[in-house]
Length: 403
Image (tube, rainbow, N blue to C red; front, side, top):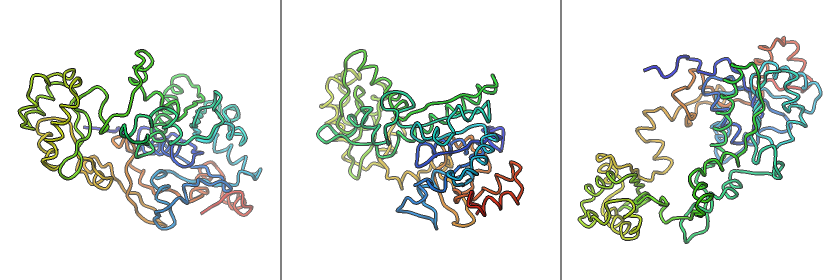
């Protein structure tokens, strides 16, 4: 079975300029790099990506937070405040297909890198801006983080148990999903450009993406006036059972999506009371939710999570032990899919990290460790026609950094 037609990846030959910091933007460009794009992290020496120094864990001089989001990229660094750097940036734009940033609206304009300025240099450029609230509307210039959007979008109101304060998701999923949306939009724009010869400006926001993910919950509220509420054990609002249960040594997630699945669950649990015709359909179980859940909890408490997972999986009942992150990383399916990979860097060494979101489309040369500041300045400028004397002069004048 052929998973990719090109060892260079499906985006081989596409150059992306990464004007990004922290998480959402770097995750978007990492996903593009994994599929073969030449991602160049363009860094301002006066305002480096703060993630470079984010602890508490480092490998040599490199922050593992930064390293986990910037592998497979190259770095060109310069002092944006120096007028001489302007021509270098424009030459980079001229060589690029995509410019992606995750600054607040207005920052790229101040840098002279807004879409209208970019198209004067590269008429078919694709420019994607990823921000908290987008480029329009009353909140456009507002500051937003993953936490902010989880609260604003209503998601925090649905997270946690009913008798506890609202909670947040355990990972920065708003940032990650927005990064995926940005990468998806860039790929769509590249297809469009191939068909029409025209680039475009793309405006993506964390809020846009999160609101779109409310899907059926939003539809229920908008059309039926139903306001979703938190449920005990992370239960699904309408499917029973679909939630966490305590076992003798931890927790297990069980999801019964239809009535035949329920019948198989009953066979495994060997509890006669659950075989009652009163529980045969989901509507019946929903009407008797507390009774059903009480019986199920009684059953699950009798054995370990591993025991139940083995028994239920054999009967094709969707389930999983609630793993720690360490346990998840050691999972045999995770390892078989090569979802944990390794990158190398000549200065700070080798480190493991999770792969990008579509490892089946991974290019063959993406195992470069996250770059040092300006590590590839001379290399990239050389590719654009700068001779060594020009690069050395710019470095001597502190316009650019050359490692």
